[in-house]
Length: 512
Image (cartoon, rainbow, N blue to C red; front, side, top):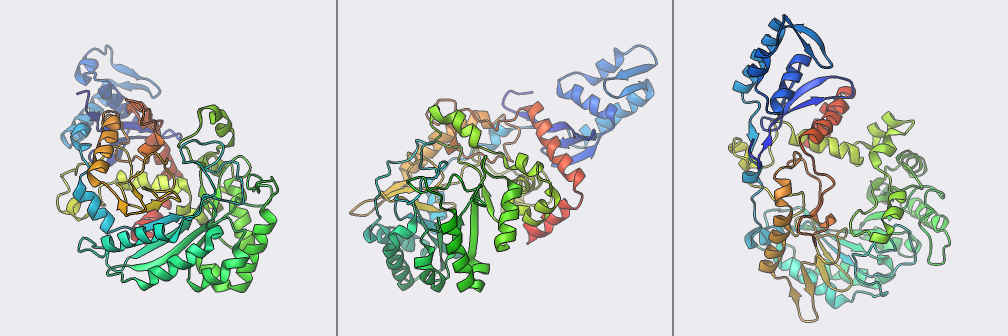
């Protein structure tokens, strides 16, 4: 096999002992008899099957971990292997020919004209000092926090720029919601700017989009500003990590707990505006070593009849001297879910809100041959379109994030060193050719590794969580042939044990 190609067919064994041959190129799988499975593994190692068979003496052949079989039985499965080969199995995937896409200016301008969200970091000030905060003690990839407040002129320049872009003829997202988000720090500390932005945005003409406002808040000032938030029908995301003991990391600057104050405000909002609370209020909970998926599910379901969004600790920009500390606080969502007593109930009710189901869905859609990424793929299914390495979003594909310092980023979860532009006192400065050069250079750093990674088309790795200062960044999600066999086996086993899951994903995720 060429060093820049990967094997298409991978033998996959589930923890239950079921064996499959899964072809990544054809996106098909077949149940495999133990003999066929063994032969496929021989072939994967590069052995000549006929030479191996001719070397076997006697009337029977011992197949490791399977038993002893007659030569006639083994010969039958050799013919079956040959039939699969004729049918398209056991080819190679030229990932070096697929992961060739380069960013260009036209692509960025088109994406920007179809922007989904612009979010403002209204302030870097916050009443709280959460232990795991992405702008806190565990991280070093953010600009210094100086209790700044964004001014209206900065916000206005960004809004005018976006308004001009999305009103262009390149916008093909007619009638789609465009979200204006408020973030911090604690955005309600700069409430006067929220008022000004809402008033200004509502005065502008939006040719293609409907505007919807959204806010992420710690809840400490909800009692003061909930009337305005409700009046303008905000999507309100309240950060809370479960009950009082679960929320131990969410404290004030002086170390005092915040749980009672937040709960009091949330209950007031629910009592005053029950319909709004039901439709437009959501909870974000961070998973860590002070809570669990089960505890979060039970708390929010019982207390507010809500299902929380469960977020992992940010894995990008961790300080070298705090890595071990971070590891102690970090909890894997799948492991936490698996340890739940009511696993089945939680999975059934939370469904696609769970990272595990999102991973299963991603594997399913990227591993089957009856769905298409876009219309071009539908009309030319045999042609695999060029792709970028990794799963990094194209600039502005998801949102534009404007920091309190006027930096423009792709989102709030990546390091501040990866800016896409600036809001200056004079204007907006976004240099598209410079962005193209930066992204293509970063892509080039990881491209060779991605070209031999077996999950290249199932990747969920953002390159900004890698150390791009290195010439060859290390990716913990990299999978070679053997690692991919185990990886795929996990998902096959998941579907074996949940026969109704496949159909539910099709109906509620793909179609719904």
